[in-house]
Length: 92
Image (cartoon, rainbow, N blue to C red; front, side):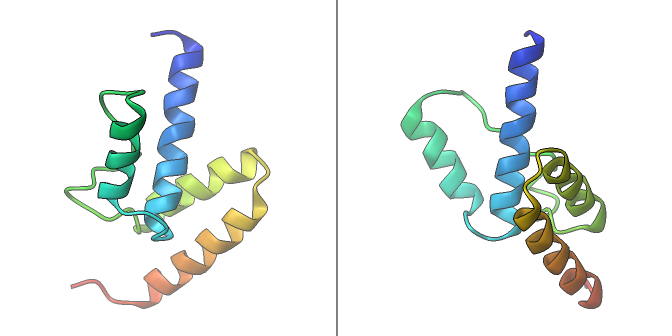
């Protein structure tokens, strides 16, 4: 794997995380999209979807930082709002 492939996987992981955190897509939706395109044998996320839903403070902060670097500030604002809501809601 070369640098550009790694960068593409990283970008895909952050876009997938954004879609899941904002609930634009489910994990199944992302899986079916990749299956349809037959581009990849696996899909990438910066967290384990079996263990968590990506709405933890550290994951959201990482995704926000990515979108700051890509200058997609609308996505940053939406993620910040979700983060604030998640921090106010106690997790059982």
